[in-house]
Image (cartoon, rainbow, N blue to C red):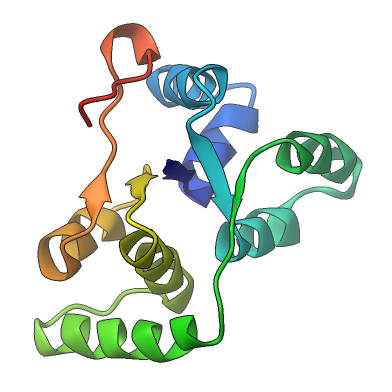
Amino acid sequence: MVIIDTSAWVDFFRRDGDLPTKLAVKGLLDAFEGALCGPVELEFLGGARPNEVAEIKAWFDIIPYITNDQKLWRKGAENYAKLRAAGHTVPWNDILIATIAKEKEATVFAHDKHFPIMAEVLKIHLYRPGYNGKFNPNY
């Protein structure tokens, strides 16, 4: 499973969004490998225009949802401390997404500068799409 980060969803839904990102999200969805988690849903729906919410919810209703429990918050705090100790300040929501990915052994597809930093420090896996956005099982 690949958690699709908010940054990738923004490009996917934006008419003039980054084409390689759009193709990669479509490739993940076509291969039934794209997933959603709570922090992404909160962040994306919270920032969506009111006239776009119904369409976004329709997409999100059919995508696998990676759940978490209350222990995630403590693990997120531990990951925040690791990042701070390494000299990095990362938004809490991104840390929660990375923590879910790490705990659930999922990969993250993001178009966000914080994820390469977290990949290095927290040892999460980042997704790299195949040619023309096709699903890459060897990510």
